[in-house]
Image (tube, rainbow, N blue to C red; front, top):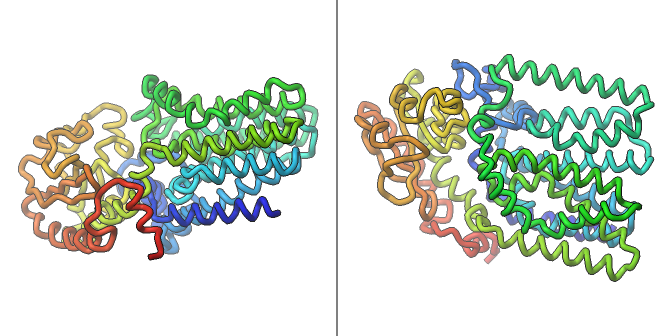
Length: 499
């Protein structure tokens, strides 16, 4: 109990410190949830062919009733992830304590709680924490089966389906633990019945997705998958951050007592990370994709330390593992950027979106092209071309390049990023000069040091757009860290200080 309470207090403080943060990509999912809640289906643009620009169907579905109620979906996502993160902490401490005692529990729970990225993945708005907690539960169920302890026959198949609905690679990640359970229960008729039911449910979901969206995989898959060089860099970056936890996982394979749990844990981590090695994940802020298996690695560290018979050795090994991730967590290269990202988004993308919603532009002409297709499309509810391609089928499938796509649609408003106050020549493959020819430049909105939004509108709607957008921006700029644009930890800490 004291261990759980102490770690729980640290968990609360960490969540409070990261509460400002919501990632722009979360608003992509929220837009789909909102459209579904309004009766339009899970679509990006109402009235257009559906495109699957998200990879977290279950997360999108979870937020739909809250969207129907008119609640703040970012807040709902934070509370949901906090609950999932708390459950993960309890699972780690309880499983390790029952298996090997207090040292094992402290190592597993401690590694999880001292890793600073944990808290930004709670508050970021995406499914990262929910998926990590779900995968941890799948693994613990698999370990129970390997240890010969009872497992409810319906739980592993249900978890497998939920994992696949929460993220496309979820089935692959959960498969080793599920296979361990099924093998140990291969003579149990109920296990096969539930597995058959899961196969039917999962197959029906996959078939519906394919029929509804027209493709076997989400649109993001076609934008990102296959960049093996980026995947190699991702792996080379990730391994040093988690090195002691990875070594503890492999250590379990060397001893007869822990070999089969080690097989389940190693296979789970390997299966989870394989997808990212072959795809080169983008938006990997604070080791987001590695975090999917992070609680599993914490579990492995706790079990490895606990299995050491000499208490001093277990404590020493555990201290190294916990201390290592505590240091690598605060040394993340993008920590300062992410720690200040929430206020930065709130004074740039969010007010631009809100201002567009208030603009006196007829509904039929409310069209937008943007590269940061999150908060701006969500708050504006304008028909949007995402010229990165995550939510745009022609660009994702390379039937049109961004410039051709935007110039052909000729949206009323175009917003592009720049890394200085000047208008850039290119933005994510968009020829800015060509795409904005004949448009009026409305102004420049600074998000942070080295990141600006350049706003353009068709001349006939320039004033109708400029007035509400710039009014919303001016108000937000005066509210969120006014005058401070630097990416520093000090700016983050200044917001946390009560004095």
